[in-house]
Each structure stands twice: as C-alpha cells, then as structure tokens.
Image 1 (cartoon, helix red, strand yellow):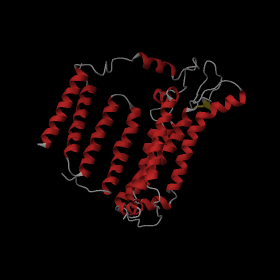
Image 2 (cartoon, each protein chain N blue to C red):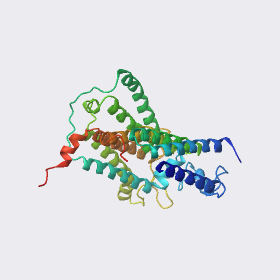
Image 3 (cartoon, one colour):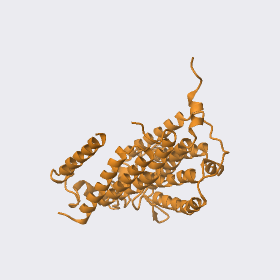
Image 4 (spheres, rainbow over the protein chains, first blue to last red):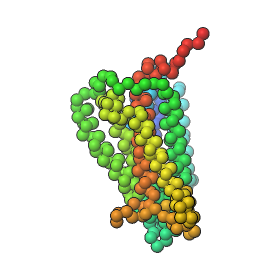
Length: 84
Length: 267
C-alpha cells in the first residue's frame, strides 16, 4: 500500500539522511551544526506524519532553537574548524 | 577515502533499515487500526463512569506521562535536574557581572525579536495550561518558553536579560520552586492519608478501588484533570528556568571561565 503519508515519510527520511551525511563529513563546525539542525527539522516532520503531535511540540523548539544555540555557544568556546 | 567510507556506511545502514521496516516488518503494522493497549487508554483516560481507572483528561499522552506512568516522568525530571546541577557546579565561582556592553545585533533583528518574544511566551503558556486538553504539556511548554531567553541572550546580550531581573539566582530559585511544586503535588495524597486516615498513594490523581482520595477534576466548571494541570505548570517552570540557567552560564566568555576554572598553577 503506497499512500501520501508513506511517500512523505520517505521524502523526509531521505532529506534527514542526506543532511546527516553532510553533517558528518563537514569540517566547518558551524556549517555541520546547521546541517544537523536541518536533519532534526526533517525528523520533526516525520514525527508529525507518524501522528505524535506531543513529540513534535517538544522537538521543534529543541531542534530549531535550543540545540543549535547550545552547540553554537560551545563552538564559540573552541575552534570553528575541525582539524584533520 | 574517508568521505567514500562515510557515504558507503550511511547508504548501507539506510538500505538495511529500509528493508527491515518494509519487507521485514520490524515496526509491526503501521496505520492499521488501533492496538489493544491503545484501546485501553483511549477508553479510560476520560471516562467519568469508570472513576477508578480514569485520569479525567482527554489528552491520552499527558495522562500516561503524569498519571499512569507518573513515576517515570518524575525520574526524568530528576535526571534533567541533575544535568542542570552539573552545569551549575562546573561554573561555580564564576560571577555573572550585571554590567557590560549591550551592543547585540542590528536594529532589524532586534525589532523582529521584540515582536516575536511575546508570541513565543503566549504560545508556551498555552501549551502548558492546555497540556491536559490538547497535545502538549510541561516539558514541551518549557522547551518552547526557553527559546525566548536564548534569543534575547543572542540578539540583545546577557546583560539585557540580567538588568531586567532574570539573573542566575532568580532562575535557580524559580526552577527550585517548580521542582518543589512537583514534589508537593506528588505528596499531597500522603497528607490526606495522615489527616483523614483513608488510604492514598503517592502521585495519585483520581479515586482508586480502595482509596477515596481524589484531586478535583473540575475547578469552577472548567476541566483541570486533577493533578495533571499542576504537574504541567510546575514542570513548565522547572524546565524554562533550567534551560535559562544553562544559557546564562554558557554565554559567559571563555577567558573568564578559564581564569576561574584553571585555578592556581602547580609547580
């Protein structure tokens, strides 16, 4: 059975996978953080499609606000570019 | 070579997990009706005819989180509490000065932030106060509310927030008030047990088969779902100001932190 929910799930899971790969391979930590936040936002959509609005409500502020902010503060305390 | 290996690993894991959840059926039937466990909760969370099993809340998730599985959530709150305590302990001895440059970002960003912050606060408050009626609850509301101080710290500066009274001490005491409130609501049934002599359980919400204690499900005609609204409000306080403390401490510049944490040099 292929319906719209399954297709959207696959699309958002694909986006999340792509940005997860970018976040792993990126050496600039700020860019990696933004890729990771995009991946989390895709996860938030997936939770919504899986009919878990309670998790969406906590995942959106965490993935878009608190998590990038916390890591940005931490990156400022160290170096911006990862050394090989 | 490294990129090739990473890409291969990602693709292999993606293909394997896709096969597992589609052909293998690892997730079980998705979107195919309601399971029997869900049926039990959907029947009982808001059921005035079965008072010994109900939580008197139409929101099944909050009912499970703070009533049926209340102790789990209590320990989750304790874990969060310990994480904040760890952060505060790491930053001990660092004085958060109230005065400093309040340059912040450009005027455009500041104006947009000024418009958005009240909206943020209203949305967070409604998630907390309607947590027992619609999707949401204390932690969700606290996380949404914590975004406000973070944005203020980034856009305006830490001193802007501290001059208006949101200091580390204030945030610590408000967070402790939230935790104290959760503990009190959990222990109120015991007070009833001591004073009236009838059986009551810790974190009890509605009446049980051998206990007549019950939080009021309605106050002034509006549904408050017994203890659920109180847990949501106090968790909201604890989470909001827990995150605020962490970000106030993280926003101290690294040189000041190192000076304090480095201590004296050893010979």
